[in-house]
Image (tube, rainbow, N blue to C red):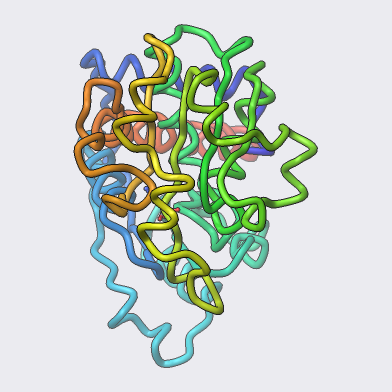
Length: 297
Ligand code: NCD
């Protein structure tokens, strides 16, 4: 998200909306692969759906059986896929900024499908699209990101982008899970206050797998202190919405019955994800064509 201008972000949101309305884009049959070295249901399947909807050929890649298991480096893996003719790879990797080792060294396009605790641009853009559909603008919107902020690449990407687009970003949840760097973007707010004042409550999954010493709260205790329950939902502003990148820990960060309530945009986010990813794929491939053209001329 750091590398995109505000105009590019808006262009991607508008393109995603055009795809949602049914715009067809015929591309030459590009070749893509999705390299997921961390677990994924939504991001992986929606990138694949986006690729297929764009008429691309999707080459299967299984991180569990790939030569990376024999010690091949990420660079050699990507270079191999470039050599066999791929145009674009989507990579999810546990290492923050895994892309630094690839940048400038390979010619195919790389989309970050989530890097460790770093960034998650496609989730961020689909969240922006969902908010934009709802409020038609970001200016002055009160967005509170709640929960396991420190471990969340979703929080980081969204905070940066939303602030740049003019939203008023705040953070809530356990203070010890805050990330001090993010306090430069927005302040910490008490959860019950956030519930009543936010236009968007962006709930985050408690990322058990990233807590080195296990979780410091019991599930019930977390839910009581920082979980969105029916009583809190009733105190939200009439037009406010609930978002969550999922997977959801039902009954922990959000009550089971709220996951599909009328304010929830959780499944809408997933549906939008396909269109956002179509826009991203088209954008990087168009940039690549433009670069090639520049080179030839
Ligand atoms: C998120 C992720 O992987 O960062 N999930 C997703 O891509 N929708 C958030 C999470 O795992 O909690």
